[in-house]
Length: 509
Ligand SMILES: NC(=O)C1=CN([C@@H]2O[C@H](COP(=O)(O)OP(=O)(O)OC[C@H]3O[C@@H](n4cnc5c(N)ncnc54)[C@H](O)[C@@H]3O)[C@@H](O)[C@H]2O)C=CC1
Ligand SMILES: CN(C=O)/C=C(\CC(=O)O)C(=O)O
Image 1 (cartoon, helix red, strand yellow):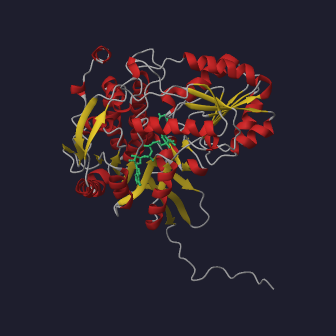
Image 2: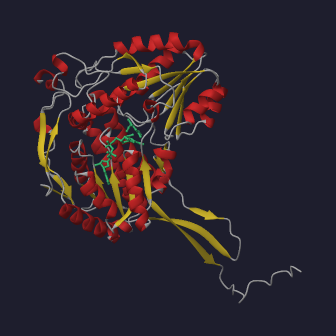
Image 3: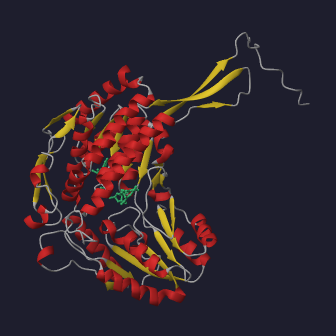
């Protein structure tokens, strides 16, 4: 793979050395030994030790101490912003390196991982700017006092992230949590431990006081569960699968710890006959098969109006066959490998489920063959039809490059089918009748509606959903408030003496 590696300007020597980041220092973890491997060819990234329970306890103690330190707790917002600006600048200056490390971690293409790195840099800049401009609120007085809200830090935030877009999801939690004046203990996914450690290096170089961030790669059942259960955890911010989200929410409920949950999806995309077909085709391919389909918002259920079903589906299948499935370092690659062999097997099992339900595999449905693919964790972009919306393959999240297409007859029909699903994360509508598209978007249960576009993100726009797709919102100012505690103040007017009892109630007789 040397030739591919050389195009990056980096080698595996540039990968983080695998030490975890605890209370401002890098050191070997005291947990299990793991291997991090490159999904493109199964080559070794690092052998490292994950965090152990002792590391978690030390990180949490340091976080508590750092959060309570007046030097941080009482720091004025624009001074906290200085740290976030420095971290954002550090990420931007190291974007190529972060991109390489994240690609080695996850198998995502360099184009995708560079975009995620710059997204993370923008996230830190956005929340720094928010800190400098966010206003508190004086509420209309209803008595001889002035009323206003103050927003205070929570204390220690447990941030738990998935493997599909680690640097972006790490930043979307750590930046607002620090901006709000908290300390953060971050646990990245077991399958993508390295880029979070590069992130830790950049944060460390920003001069952020020790203890305010620790990064503990470790198992979900050990470090993840330990974070959720730890008495010092004041808020849990989780992104991952719905099943784990439920488990975390149940644990958090025992201590009434607030949670934000960014979970799974099975998002519908709808194509009307008046859509710009070329635009819709490009958007649907990107919305489904970029990130190799490993995206929470992947448009994995495609509803095509019956009048154009055959013609549009034929174009879609032909275009899917043309997608470049290749090495993540190849600039022409559109679809790279999946994260892990176990995930390839999971995706293949879902395609077998579709077959068992009468699904027709119109393209894909297998691993690619050829020297390039034999060591990597590849799976072909797959399009299936011939099943109805009640089928398991239409109800469950695959989190891989598998699209299911179905016809619809009218707006009521497609709204009903779109909502007939446990998830409610996102939806896409392709129509040049914007009034209709807005009405469809309003009627579908989804946290994000894309109209004549798809899978576009902005840190200034809240993201999240309901039903089995989560609780709460990330990004935007809502994403900042989530890491604060609102406190109401009543400031009594001078010289006003409160009557002993409230004015007598009017005689109700
Ligand atoms: N809604 C959103 O914004 C996003 C949602 N996702 C979802 O994430 C999933 C794929 O990511 P995975 O890492 O496979 O999800 P996962 O749920 O298996 O793991 C997510 C994180 O939780 C940890 N974890 C696992 N069990 C835990 C437990 N009992 N207690 C605490 N932590 C635990 C894991 O180690 C990992 O760090 C998909 O369902 C996808 O839809 C992914 C990206 C964005
Ligand atoms: C939530 N989200 C982006 O904000 C999801 C993404 C892209 C990313 O993580 O940046 C995804 O699932 O691919």
